[in-house]
Length: 286
Image 1 (cartoon, helix red, strand yellow):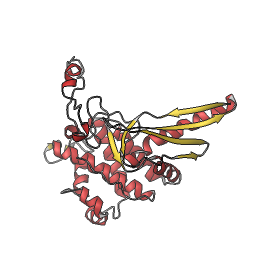
Image 2 (cartoon, rainbow, N blue to C red; image 1 turned 30 degrees about the vertical axis):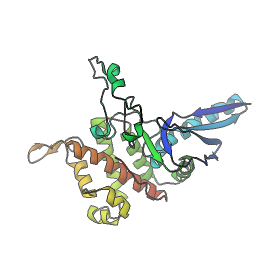
Image 3 (tube, rainbow, N blue to C red; image 1 turned 180 degrees about the vertical axis):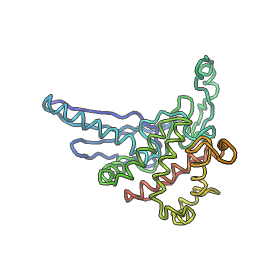
Image 4 (cartoon, one colour; image 1 turned 120 degrees about the vertical axis):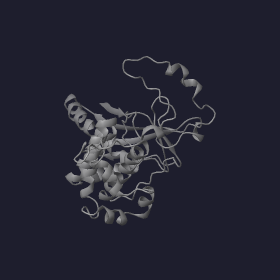
């Protein structure tokens, strides 16, 4: 008998209370989580999927099933920690999220790697790095109160019973997060189009906004759902590039871009979790 085992990429999480790490069976597989605190940087978190396998035929069968499960986890953990497990895109919330941009430009060489050590905060990076900031090697991190696996398993279970609309919303939302720039905006606009159907009053975004929980409305600050859909439909980067009255639509400025990305995440995450019977996920981004 052999053990089939998949281990996730390392996630950087600061977990306030990691005393009750979780392990449970999901279908044919066992899911377990592991966490190593780190006082000088951020805690390292991993998930494993394991299954005892007796024969080659079983190995073929379970390797296909575990592939499906691992891909579901990659996406659905977004609705626990705020981003996919396998996120690699560097373009998360724009320039406001980056302390230094040193990625290589196609066709150019740079000395960014050589000078990077002079900019890295070595004494106490927690003073300067906040939720989901990319820094140096494009790593991102999140602070959460409890280990995420228990809620993730709940989402996995409920996802299987979710309607096709919710599944398509999750598909386009998480797909958008893996891309950068123009492709991201276009895919995210599709996700927002699906999300609109799940609003309390799909044909009246003002009423829908007022119907959101107060803690979600406060996250919009001086924006609204109507503003978000205005960005989605009437900016150069999103769904419709042509303004019938004056040629091309205007591009988003930095503040609009940042808020468009953040508020899309907040609204879609709220709607997905609501459809799955979960309380809102509150973002604290600095």
